[in-house]
Amino acid sequence: MRLQVLRKESLSPHMIRIVAGGEGLRDFSPNEFTDAYVKVIFKVPGVEYPEPFDLQRIRAELPREHAPRQRTYTVRSYDEAAGELVIDFVVHGDEGLAGPWAMRAEPGDELLFGGPGGGYAPRADAGWHLLVGDEAALPAIAAALEAMPAGVPAHVFLLVADAGEEQPLVTKADAQITWLHRADGGDLTAAVKALPWREGEVQAFVHGEAGFVRELRRYLLDERAVSRGSLSLSGYWREGKNDEAWREEKAAERARESA
Image (cartoon, rainbow, N blue to C red; front, top):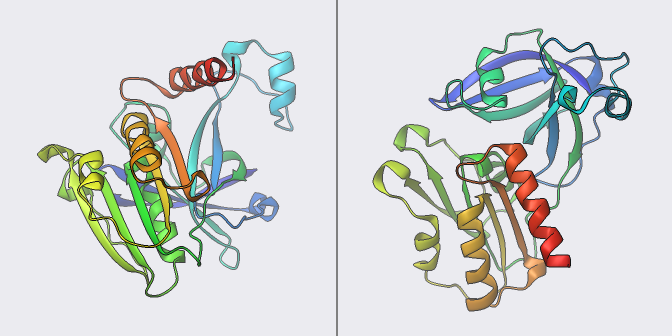
């Protein structure tokens, strides 16, 4: 899908909201997931791409180094009536690919993406909810909180750089929201393990940096005996690796596990 940037908003010192729309949004089909994600596509500067833009044709006809780069982002919200789709981008200056693009984006700029996919939404029949993540997971956690029914218990742990990165979160759930700060040595794994465990079936969403996701996976499965069907776990990124290197590492891990 090919959209245009309508406007952008600064949510915090390191998060920018891009609101996009245009004729291409008519082809967007929302799904039922609160972690609905799209693959945002970035063209390699200086490369001439065939029109209409077709990834399969590009991969077949152009050298590998000319293939557009892709980054995965959560759909923060979609408003069909207003003709707007919202994506929040974490920005660290000129570091990375998508963040610098969002920082420099202007109304009228092109936004290419494919999707959406997804796999999680809070269940109405869960006894309580556990949501754990960092900045990369914040949009999906915010969307999940907005979708929860009134009064359902929820414990939320979010790790951000410092107090300036905290955002207001809206929910009808009975949510206890804990913000942790890297500047103060915040530790998501330790915070979750210190949580007094509630009775009833938990539905857990743990997404973000691969290190803490792996630690909490072991804790929830082995020590708390949470059923796999009640867990949504995803390492969005790995400390010290760019997206391409992290995807290659994940593919190698999956190959070893299946061997």
